[in-house]
Image (cartoon, rainbow, N blue to C red):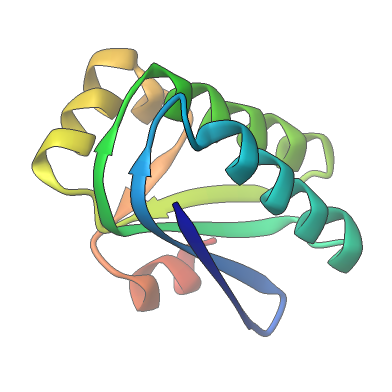
Length: 111
């Protein structure tokens, strides 16, 4: 999986490209945590527009980042979930704690 980081004011946007599964989740976790710590941010948008597949390891990675940001009194949201990934979020109950948006502009206004 490839990650692209960008920043809009005090919000880090992480664009993920590829599959978020047991092969990539640990590397993604390390890279996102490093960016959170280095830039001392507490607002994250995870852009799933280029993620074709996510399994339970991806759920763990997203929830872990949510908890890390919550400790800093921040917010983590997700955007642009495809049908399959959205179904994983629904089945796991993640939408109870993590909000999803259709696009980055909408998410920036609400994060």
